[in-house]
Length: 249
Ligand SMILES: Nc1ncnc2c1ncn2[C@@H]1O[C@H](COP(=O)(O)OP(=O)(O)O)[C@@H](O)[C@H]1O
Ligand SMILES: [Mg+2]
Image (cartoon, rainbow, N blue to C red; front, top):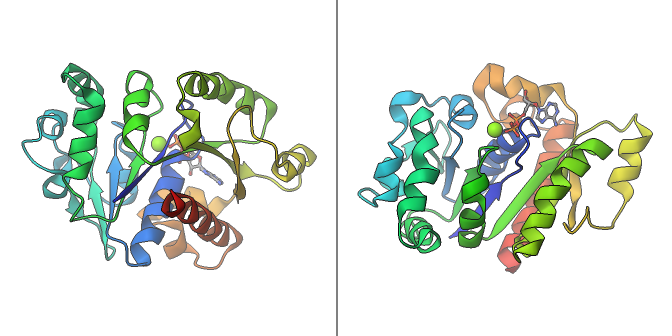
């Protein structure tokens, strides 16, 4: 089983939107996919039409009393399962930190579902701070969405440098989201091939698109709203690029 997390300590950069679409595309390709909503704001849960009652207590996950597949619910889509979130999930970091070896514990929690899922997609909360190193150590790839503006890049830089300093940046890649091709700054940013700071940049980028905002209104993944729009094709391209990366590892 492979595990990918969408992470940035900044909110509003597109972690949830992209995680939901990525998980949906993997599932539609036939991979049994778990979308783990780790954010107590529960936006991914909302989009996939889960609610508070579907969300397990964090302690149930950390104590290994139940495995993730037992706690997950089916979504409306084939092969796509949701580990729903609610305010209860805010205690996950604290509970996991209490265990003797948090990385080992989380690795075991994920491995316990090896036979049930081919892929786990984690939608991270913005304030994963204390937990980010633990989670990154236990998974295959971290995708860091950010906007191609100098300020957004700068604020992600601190986090990226920190991950590099503890040897974790090798698992991380950056992704430009909300790209507006009418803006010269955005065109320059996406054409650059150099890493962003110490983070390699994905070739794919996601354009600014009203259809992506619609996901929270119709509560559907983007390819269901608009199958062949520019943004939907961009998400498909991103899915292909990331799958190549994780399966090459
Ligand atoms: N490419 C995009 N184009 C337009 N709106 C976007 C795009 N990506 C995300 N959004 C919107 O930006 C807001 C924040 O996105 P979200 O996925 O919730 O970010 P995060 O999970 O990082 O907080 C949401 O309203 C979402 O619909
Ligand atoms: Mg989010």
